[in-house]
Length: 394
Ligand code: EJD
Image 1 (cartoon, rainbow, N blue to C red):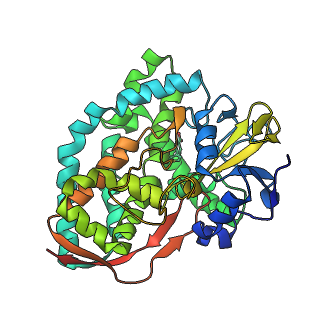
Image 2: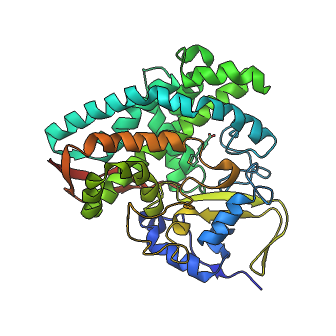
């Protein structure tokens, strides 16, 4: 059986402006398709995406998780020791990071992060109208995460610039990628400096990575690169995760009412929001052998793009997938990935979302859109530039 070919470029402006509008065509064309414009295989159904993510032996990460094949072209930055690594290296670095970003570490930061959420919500309630992306989605993670990682205060805006470049770089060298790369030159230097032990606050997560490095047989340079992973992955993801969650509640007011009636649902809100509209839209793997997918063969050494967002709305897997529903069983969603690379920071992201909601729930009766949401195009993230909202006090 042959693989259906589509003339779809999932990184062009038309696609990135409204990815969900294109996902059904990708899913319906077959379990695996060939995308001619980017010369790459693609999977968009939940079953195949989940299976590929779970099979890291066949679908490896060490040749990059973007379109670029690191065995053919030099990566734009030294590869991540976590994201762009396979076992056994991956398991060693992941082992260290799991000790740093642990349940205990999260319990320790919770009181401070909760206080910050309440302070921020106090300000927003006074304004009533605000931008839920810049003034909440960006503001909240930037109030808690950089301090916890322990980076210098000066120049922290570089973190946002850097992350946008990291996620653009997983796509092709299109205009969006190149724009990000130019803007990121300064941020790359700032981040490299921030990752050094001398730059990191004592007792911070960043310092803790350095402290543990010897035990995991990692050099100081490798420890710096693991701190870089926190800074790469921990900002733009939660910024847009919170932003899109606010869009979800503004778009489904009955779900806000439902949450207020049962505040315990706050802990599940981010997962359903990610299922409904996944911040991380796509990830690539590279095949280590010829692999049969439902009768079609993908050759060895092929790049395969996995549409996490399409899998999370696959009607073959989800009932009423377009509906944001807090009471839905979200288990199996791939918004945090699946398998050995499944998001290291998922508990951080859930905690941030939960604390923001906890602060809002008792005090906000309604969240209303106060203008059109504005997209920010990125080759990997479903990102928002702006989300004007009005909140009505309880
Ligand atoms: C990421 C999708 C790194 C790194 C790790 C993870 C991500 C980005 C960068 C978060 C991908 O290790 O540098 S969500």
